[in-house]
Amino acid sequence: MAAYKSIGFIGLGVMGEPICRNLVTKSGVPVTAFDVAAEPLLRLRADGAAIAGSVADVVARSEIVFLCLPSAKHVRAVFEGDGILNNIRERQLVVDLGTSSVSQTRDFARQLQAKGAAWLDAPIARTRQAAQDGTLSVMVGGPRELYDALEPLIRCFATDVTHCGDVGAGQVTKILNNMVLFETVNALSEAVAVAKAAGVDPKLLLETLSKGSADSFALRNHGLKAIVPGVFPERAFSTEYALKDLSYALELAREGGIRLRGAELIGTILQEAVDAGSGENYFPVIAKLIGER
Image 1 (cartoon, rainbow, N blue to C red):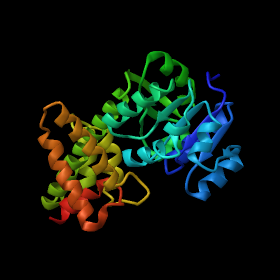
Image 2 (cartoon, helix red, strand yellow):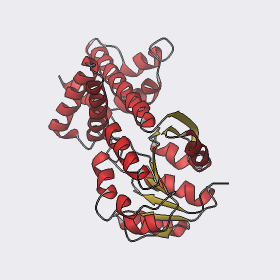
Image 3 (tube, rainbow, N blue to C red):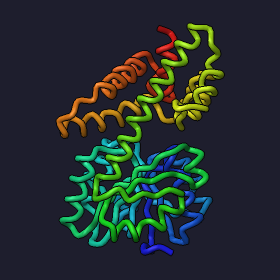
């Protein structure tokens, strides 16, 4: 099935664990996993994964290494030290499934290329349930020939796979996806707050909007499932993560000489939600902040 005979996986959090499990059960290729937490490692070992003791151990045992980490800072931590760069071999491939800085992505790709290896960005989109079901959307940046070799493995956990261009293009696409999502959720939050103040039922409002030109994935999911019932759990896509991803969009805009006033505003709102103690809550919690005001 795959061009690679051994898989490594680093980062077994909310999304990483189910993605890794899909690779273990569907790829037909041995998978070696690593995380700083013991519990997901034990669960994946029961599913058939081998367990590594370190990042270096994963790199030593794998032709392709997937990363599913929370931020660019975490990716840098496994890249440096006795990590990826120090242990990489020729013809190995590292695939970053997280949303990360475009400039860092391209820098790491250059460093691996100098050692005869490669770095591809393949950030994931959709929900934890989609990760479990293997129905994620993945946006890939990298050379076409590497994408073609990688795609069968990605299909183990995704139903929509898009080759967006060269290294970094996947990150650009995902970052802008998230920027649009955050701004849309803010608009929905404002609409619900005004509807409540004006005596219109928020659920009726959003169900009616879903039948017209204001319909969106965000309305049907973030709006009706989180904003209207006021459900903003932890261990979902948090306000802090949203603020981190938005910072990447603002960084891209600055590099392009573009001012994004809407994105700047949602950045301020997300920061206010963090300051109010909602940093670890599901990011549509901004509706609570707007409604209280």
